[in-house]
Length: 380
Ligand SMILES: Cc1cc2nc3c(=O)[nH]c(=O)nc-3n(C[C@H](O)[C@H](O)[C@H](O)COP(=O)(O)OP(=O)(O)OC[C@H]3O[C@@H](n4cnc5c(N)ncnc54)[C@H](O)[C@@H]3O)c2cc1C
Image (cartoon, rainbow, N blue to C red):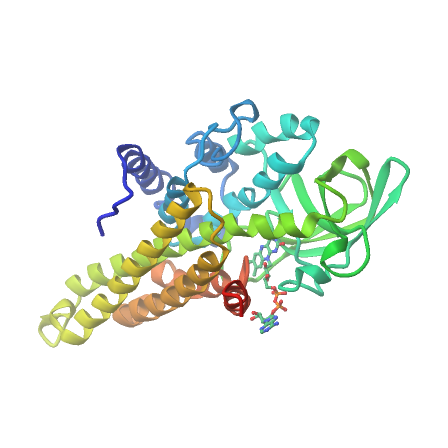
């Protein structure tokens, strides 16, 4: 679909990314997924494109500019490779970069941001706990002040990049119960008192790692407190905006991959003497998928435009996220139906996307929570 917000720079950016994904990722991503990891060089090669530098000052290795359309394009083009684990493995850092730049001390920012943005080092955001995911205000990991330090105890789970990241942004309770007693901390992965174990045998995202982190009397200097004490909840919520937008961009890329595979297969596959593409039932499925892709794309563009114009369209982001993941669920199911038995075999994009729909619908704010938030934002 023609994008009224396209500019020569954005078109060129997409071209560079598409070329990069088709050369550096597509030929290998199935193998990486089966192996359960991506090579670290990919983080660095991707970092060289500047994709993690949006909104980051140049002195910290960033681009010194921001453009929501380009952020989303990056996620969309990665999503098109149809291996969500590649995006998860690399973009775990994306949801921690922004709070580091906004809230960490100058010493931390200048030490770690250039490494993370360039892809030399990895970072993760650790909010979810075994006893709470959606209910962020219920988190229990504690941070007790002890002189010039905080002592952190508790655990986090489902943390993307948890086994490989060098740095963590961690939500912990410094005050009383509820959303007002939460703070954010910057933690180096080699700090004494941090242990991590991998979460294995997942439904999808095989080539990314998720881990449970254990904090056992972990001491961090008070300077590692990010932002104001007890004020972390708002920062966590603000950070969700870009995460949800990025996930929606990835979803759009996955939907386009479903359509791409469906059209290619329907042209090649003959049944009862005719190509599938000639059958009205199949043509309608393709039309239904394509219409949903257009709708998600147009919605994304509108939200990007709002972001670029300084708005925080929380209701729209929430609606976009669940609308997009429902549309992906439809596309993955229809695409697999068109591929028939061939789609059921491991090693093709549709089979993988079909397994990875749910993580998009749950991670970064589940469909149910997104609907609740949207309606609350509508003042109801
Ligand atoms: C592969 C993967 C990677 C992840 N990476 C990270 C990461 O890097 N960092 C991180 O901090 N977290 C991460 N997460 C965690 C993710 O953010 C949570 O899984 C998500 O927020 C949902 O929390 P939960 O799984 O505890 O589900 P729960 O909160 O227990 O919810 C279970 C179900 O109940 C529904 N539900 C919950 N409350 C309500 C309600 N009030 N009304 C109606 N329905 C409700 C939910 O929508 C969901 O469908 C990851 C998760 C996965 C699966």
